[in-house]
Image 1: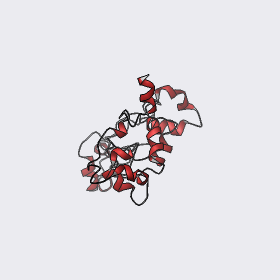
Image 2: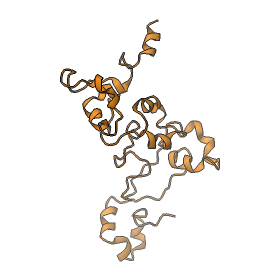
Image 3: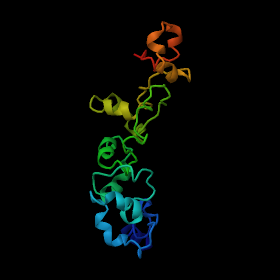
Image 4: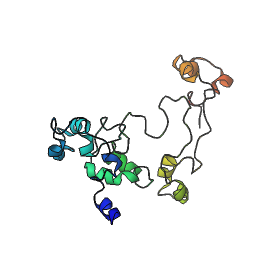
Length: 195
């Protein structure tokens, strides 16, 4: 019987990770409950995330203040379990970036670290890659699978930099000013020698 009540009252019973923190101010100072309708407001949404995270379901979010979800907070909270699935990864990255920890420029987007130093690890981004392995060769899903599941789809590039100084060397013209083909191979990725 208690389980039924818990399932019906997940937020009230603090059974949702998004609601397990406390609001920083007591209700006597800032009545968050009275302002709950402002959680997704364009005008007050950011203020509410910061001052009323428990009320708005924004607890334990590394980047709750970096961007806002496009969809309503309640919708994103319910869909959060699908953030890292192949089928919903792109959609939820657009609609629920804060909930899925994918605010622009927070370092959580797949595809490397952006400086071409070859330190990108070959890892799957989605958590259900293995169960979708057959899609790696499906014409409809292959581009998505190879982007989100490079390890599972065996599409990782072996073209990497083998020297830690590559980014510094490249910034000083190493790849363009000098004709050192063998040495440049140590910085194959940074020198754009990958095929």
